[in-house]
Amino acid sequence: MDEVIPDEIYSWTEADFAKYEVPIGNSRFPITDFFDITVEGEAEGPADVKMIFNGDLNRVKYIGCKMSAGEIICNSSVDLHVGAEMSGGSILVNGDAAAHAGREMSGGYLEITGNTKEFTGASYIGDWRGMTGGEIVVGGNAGKQCGECLTGGKIHVKGNCDILAGIHMTKGIIEIDGDVNRWPGGQMKNGTIVIHGFLGRLLEGFVLEGIVEDPEDSGVVFPGKYIKYTGDIGLNGKGSLYLDAEANKEKLSTYGELDDDYTSIREYRNL
Image 1 (cartoon, rainbow, N blue to C red):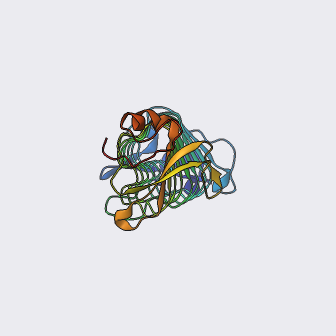
Image 2 (image 1 turned 90 degrees about the vertical axis):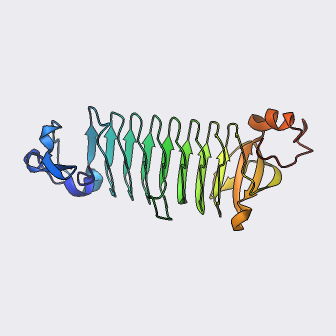
Image 3 (image 1 turned 90 degrees about the horizontal axis):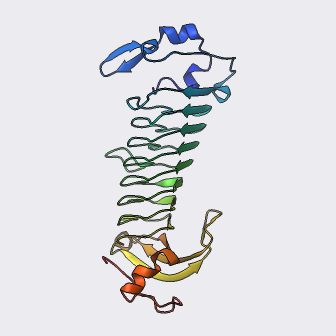
């Protein structure tokens, strides 16, 4: 669906859609073999377009890829690369998204109400630059390597997150409301990771800075008390990793890492 975006179809009529053939593998087939299409009103440009997809989209890839304006609503779970390389506009997925959601996006807003698989907001395999701007909101859980090579923008995961969130990141914000499996921020050079839930395991390359309250990054304030780490020191990294103090207090106390008043904090690793 990377050819069917507001930038390209804002002037199309139903007759134009009827002539269009969508790529499937190495062949192309009429899009009307798969969708009933209705066009309402006229648009002067991409920003005037609102596309609504209904039905089963689990095998539909690249929805909103490279879009710069307009609005897309998907009333189903979607396949790979939704919102990849988008620079503007908004996409709402009322369901789950497969891998590479928001890949290398530079602007715009992508919201997935369900879960995402691996590489949300990340770079493509073999590349070094992932998401550079815009915002991704995941209402459920995110898979491994969320925000890999993040160089700008914000990713907000409202559920839990799998391993290696923010690996290789150099800028931007990753906020995770739930728990994190292990190893966030591996080889990060800069940027901010905020974890409101429980962290299973921290990498060796992070240095304990102490307790901070209401930390801020790029005008975004995170209310509360956090345990702050800086890293990844293996790359002379200056990234900030904030763990919610209350959510992680019980585990740290079990291992003698801090007392009730947070006055005796030591680093904890590989617990």
